[in-house]
Length: 502
Image (cartoon, rainbow, N blue to C red):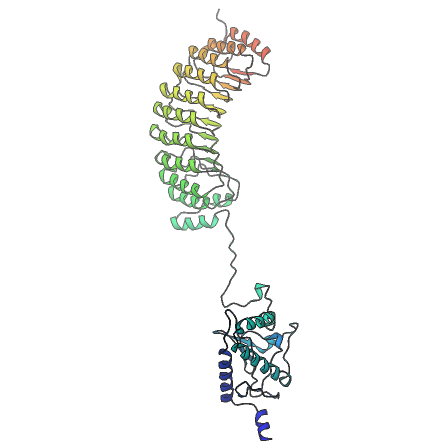
């Protein structure tokens, strides 16, 4: 009777430690297969527990604590040791603490059973595992046991193994969703603070527009650097006008940095900014940019020294369709370089070289480039100095070119003889629709020669002919009536009819 009572009384703390240590030694002595944890559980009640059950013994005859175990199909990996309100799970070298409530969640399909009914089956299971561990095939049999109970190992914890959100982690995973600033406003404000400039209110209001005009704002180098920092990140602006800001070298380099990153701007106006000192960097950036289609570089004081970089841009660009180089100082040497580049270009549709100093051999080289170009539609050569030599070269260009649609050679020092030569080119041209030769000293006789050449071309496609500020006489009007009868859709503009001298 005393022995029975002693077995039913709760064990002391020292006894529990000995039992726990002995149990772990017995379990750890088993030859576990690779990637397989010992699948057993021993649950110790605290000293205040009032539950009573049967004692269990291991193979050595030692007594386990009065235990309360989980049903065999729901045993988790490792060993569980209960304190009053929680349990510790030993899995390999890791120790986890679990609340008792987590082992008794509703809906898991597993529950704690009475110690009297479960102690013996559990000890018997330990004995079987120990016995299997001594056999040669223990690894395979243990693996089979592990496979049978794999789902139960995690189900007892109430964890959904499919849903990764159910797994706990010690890492602090904070989902910080960063919104991309597609306007570049943040970058602009930070750059203004960095360069100590006042943010432009106009720029802040319109940086979200598709078209932004910042002309005549007098932007300094630092102000342009701040705007460039915003443009590098901006994804909304497609057309940008920075004309007449006198950006000079520093502002030009800032634009280059912005264009390195920006791939949304397709139309860029940098006219009247004195960018001759950064012509090399600017031409390199434009040449390698894959989105720019229209670029205006007029009024930037480009001279023959800059022509090398401009010619390289024209020759190697693959995306640019419109280029404006007007109102610069490109002279004869520049014409020689640009002419060969024009002949090799395969993407420019429109080129503006007006208001430069193209003369003599330079003018002839440009005309030669037009002759061999097979892609350009519009060429503006107004306000240069082609003269008679250039007129002869233009005659050959008009005869050979079968793509060009518009040509403007206003105010190019072309005389009557030059007009006759150009007229010979028009007799063979079938694609030109707009031709402007006004403000040249060709007089009425030169106009008459061009009209007569048009009459001889049955396939002439001209729609508009301009003799601006050139007065014509009655002889011209007579021949022009014949032109109108043959080409009724052809319009003409001239400087009025001269009064006949008495």
